[in-house]
Length: 416
Image (cartoon, rainbow, N blue to C red; front, side, top):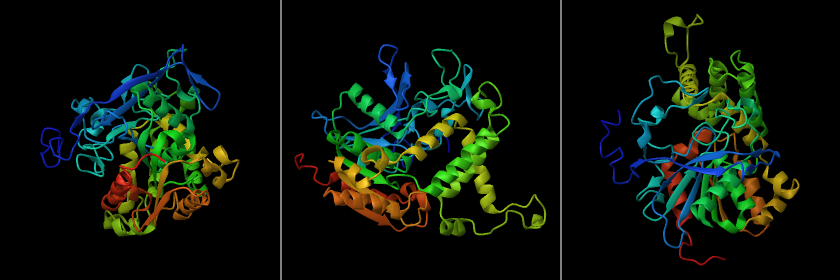
């Protein structure tokens, strides 16, 4: 199905779709006004890509900020109008000496959370002004390692400064300032986006009415850190990595594919994988040879292959490191999560998923307990699901009901 054959029922003409969207750009750092990072570095140029859906009301109190997960981007809903012309190859398109992911991968499907955003959907664009921006260090329009360093004229590569979840949230706050928005009705995110939603409630408590944290807690599990570490090791030891200076040359595709395959296992669950794949073989005639392949192997290879066509290896290193390093208790409470949660002024929603072993239900309940200890408003839901960590994207009906209720609760009530 191409953009020319989309039907009104499923495509941009659908009455519940935000339709064709065009990403926007904002320059949020210049040589005269650099962006200070938590590492101590200062960036003299930062460009942020973002998209908006719906209309900002006169009071500017209907803003819902979407914070995205690891490999996502600002294109959360609708159909990307800039993807109508495919790139010549399915690979990264040369951007001078660097790389830019082709937008053609967006052509055949809508934004990554389109099921939740649009007229009449849980994040109803007839009521809310929804905004999503791409994080610093990514490869989807916001300044990242593949972009040109203004000091050298060459891609940053590993000279790009370290970034943190705190840096991302600070940059999102600057973007809202740039647009003229003082306070947001809600910030909503899942996984790494959920960490950002929590950081918003802690870093800018006076600017957030509601923080909706899905499939995330105050820190990534130790097992999750371990898997990310092995993924980075695969990239760093790919023979084409060249200390991050592979732009203009063969990219470390094998290392990045292996990292994605490994990560994808953590997004699923044992039960879900067994139901979907079992021990089914693709070709039973090759069971005794190295050419034999289980269905789950074929699936993971596909995930790895498709990922290297749309993501930059250096960006993967930076984003996963930020994910690993985030610990709300250390950042705001000297190691005590309850002390950190004293800062919260938002109505909180925390949702875990029963089979998620990346951000476990136990970790989510620990966060909820810390919020409750301070007498703050929090709703907790543990959603039964066989889909593992990916459930926040897959369990559309359950998640949709949860978000719809949370966004509308107390809508007519004055600010406490």
